[in-house]
Length: 206
Image (cartoon, rainbow, N blue to C red):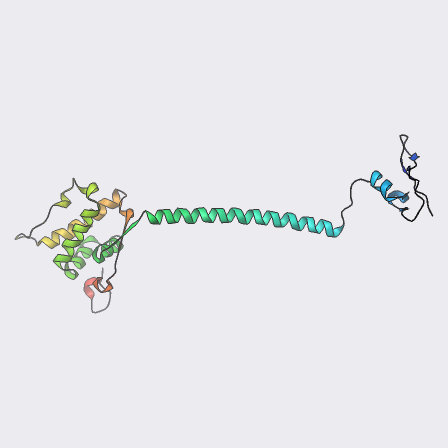
């Protein structure tokens, strides 16, 4: 049986026998062709040698940790974005008005004359008056000092509902300039009260 060569001495190249003086099957050939027992091998070469499998496992663990951290960051960002969107949506009020919904949707895609022509021809005077009152009631604090809040009456020169339709478009433009129109979304529930675009409805061709 080979004897353990022990541990390195103070003088380079010298060896100090291990007190146990092992001379059995635990002594084996190690780095530098040294015959060492397990204790002396660990003493001489304390840095553990990583095997390929342990290195691969370590890389896999580090990669998984990095991916998990990235996913957590993305989830936190997405959650924050969704929360902000929900908060913005919760600050917007929905108001049912087919006429105002129609005006807000088409006012930037056609001329004002064409839009007023459609409104006054398709909607009844009562619907136009109700839409104006709804608009004023929602934004009275903003337009209280304007002349738009005056109740119109039919004159010999112009019907009242035509003047009110003109004021509706003017109020909406004013509110948009004041950056408060985005606080309210006008929606249509009764789609039959929205002007169409069929060949038989040329009045709606803006």
